[in-house]
Length: 180
Image (cartoon, rainbow, N blue to C red; front, side, top):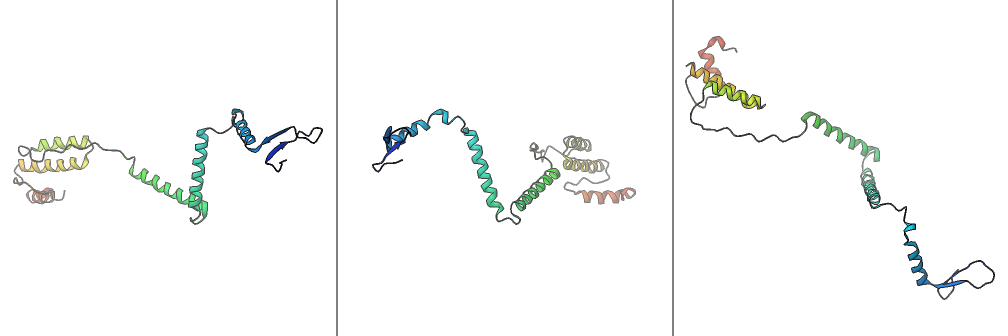
């Protein structure tokens, strides 16, 4: 019950018409605020973590809700698109393997003191193969073959010869091995 003067009246429902307590509006508001600020009214309130988690899930729900609207098929269509993207990523991961950094290769000396022997090229090829550097291992093995032919005077010593040129010249010098 509220009087015209702006004061609230608490009726006890007892005998007589006079109210037992009359409190003005502002003090009543402050009294209610103090009462509701007591710990016993907030024992079951969610913790800061629970409130943050709820805010995150609400944000995620809003995000997917707004993304599902323009997607053909709505939420189901969005789910299919997400599953398709995940399948493509899984296939790429399976095909390419786990990404990892390879150690930086030490650059070989380009111009050392002189030409290396066939045995030195074979040793370098074995070292590259042991480190799984297959491209360099094959190159060194080819250099070892050519250097071996030069050391036996089957081929004349000529720097800058390509593998195809070496094979063609060796085929002319050794016709029995041309097919191989």
